[in-house]
Image (cartoon, rainbow, N blue to C red; front, side, top):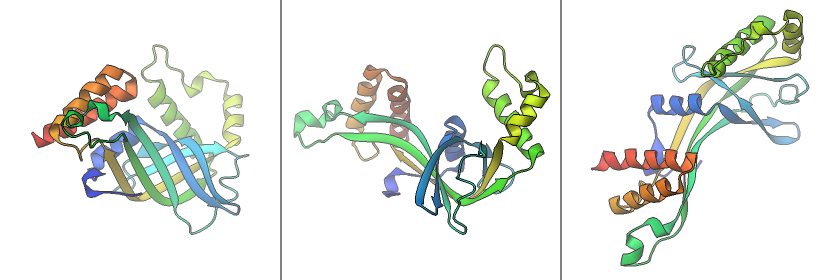
Length: 214
């Protein structure tokens, strides 16, 4: 990933926060036919290594685990907020006009070796963990135990677990750091006017960046 130093985010807690907040990952592996990308929610487990471990599951019919090139790193991409940035939001447009559009975004890239797990107890524990986490905010949370046990066992038999101990972790926060403060302020206002969830999230990120330089 192209990484100008002013866009690099190295704080582990910030990278972990994005992974936890946006768990649907792009999982990039190498197969006999070339590069393959799958989109899979992954759970960050923080206790098994210094950087963290990612855990998830895929269908047994998914060739990602049967056609996985050995000794090749896996890349996992977590995408955070992103938004188009209009040059019309820059006050410097009125001063000299030397401005262009861009796109702001935050992203985390994780690397490691993918391990396939067939243990039904491990898979069930993972499913229960994922379910508890993602159902917690609902008024009537669903639990794995709500389904008939024989049905659950059949479903567990139809999937395999995957795990990747993270060996390298990179974050890129492109949030207008390369613009003067007046343009960052203009970006914040423009994004708030757009009002979409991602635009508002990005306005917060730009404001946090601006506050560091004040």
